[in-house]
Each structure stands twice: as C-alpha cells, then as structure tokens.
Length: 284
Image 1 (cartoon, one colour):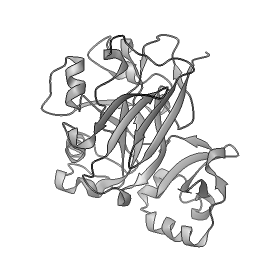
Image 2 (cartoon, one colour):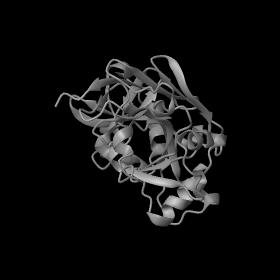
Image 3 (cartoon, rainbow, N blue to C red):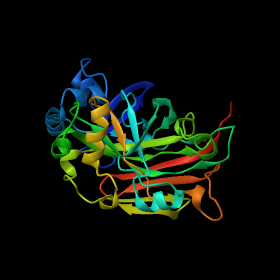
Image 4 (cartoon, one colour):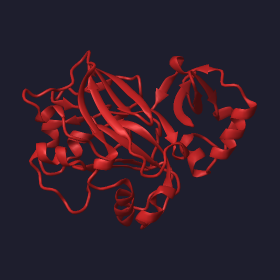
C-alpha cells in the first residue's frame, strides 16, 4: 500500500493511494486514530486492506495538499557518510559505526511543496536518500530482527545548507533550516518491499541526473543502522530513519551546484516513487 498524510479542507488527515485516487482513512478509522503515525502504532494495516475492499477511493491525489509522510514523528534520525563514493568526495574518514545526526519536523516539506532557500545562505544542496519508517518500536533491536520493526519506506531529500553545516564538526545547523528537506510522496508499506531488496536511488536537478546508487552499496546496512540507533535511543512507531546519501552532491562538484529558486529537484527510488520539490527563496 501507499499511505499519505494530507490536508482536507485545512484539516490534517491520512489515506491510501490507489492509482490516481485516494481513500480518506480519517473518517473511516475514527477519532481514536488521529493520523498515520497512530495507524502505524496500532498496526492497522490489515484493517486498511479491509476498508479498501468495501470503500471506493474518491479523492484525486493531484488535488490534495500533502503533508510530510509522517508529519509528527517522535524523532528523525539521519545517517551520514553511508556510501563510499560520498565518503571519498567529502574527504572524511570512514567510521566503524554509523555517523548520526538529527532533523526536526519543521525542517521538512511534503511532496509538491517548495523547499525554501534561507536568507542566510545560497549554498543549499540536495541529498537524495531513502527514509525508513519504524513500525514496531524497541530498544537494542538485533540486526536479525530489524526488518520486523519496519512499517515502510519513503523518498527523502536531506537538503543541506553547506556553509552552516560546516561551521563546526556538528552538522545540526546546516541540516535543520526551516523547510529545507523533502519527505514523500508516500510510505510504501514493508510488505511490498522484501527485506534486503536492492533499491535504486537517483537524484535529478532540473531533469539532469546528479546522483545514482543502489542500496547494496550502503556501508552500514539498514538492519545495522536500526541496531546501532536503538542501542542509544528507544525507537517508537512512526520514527523516521534517513539512511544516507551517495556521491554526487552539489557542494563537491566542479563547479559547485546549489539549488536556487525555480529549480525542481526529484528524488526517485524505483520501489517507492518520485519525491518532487521546487525551490523558492525565504520571504521573511
């Protein structure tokens, strides 16, 4: 299934995408299931399948104002330097354990919305990635059990303000400017993507391919990431793990390439879909 979060008459809701139509799950699941995160927490995927058999999707996907797939995760944990070509282009050392940083909810926008270039910098870079959404929480998850803890997958653009990222060894400022990252368009549930299935990730800027990789080239696999992160932080349903970007970022190109107003950036994962965002300047 493809599950989304969206606004309906200004009110947040969530639904399931079938071709170009959407079944609004909010009214059908009732007030006890406030959003997609709650549906994941309550493991309602079987119930959603049942609703699809008895209800006709009637909303047009193209007409909806989407929200980030999980608008309200308890945490967004990002893995840096997780492909060899990216480690090489940055000139950094390969680490034995995953490099971890955090993003905040309001640093994100949804599919179809504009990523915002801040007033303080024009060095806004793309980073195509795959997001993992946690289904079953846990502490000290074992690698062998990690796949059982995944609810689904989405596309992610870990938009980075490079000069602010590199002011110090701590990356958080450059990774958390308001509305600089993209998360969408939907979550593909884990039953449609086999454990360890090799997925192809590409990033395009104005139609030109800038990044391409496959998930088997990750330095730290998805199970290893979940095991490492959950050793430190108890994971909860709806948490988001952003799994790393490959080489080809704009900051390391000659000449450098940064996103600017009017640009369109697309993150495509063959097993998921395409996350598409325009770029605009911050207006205030």
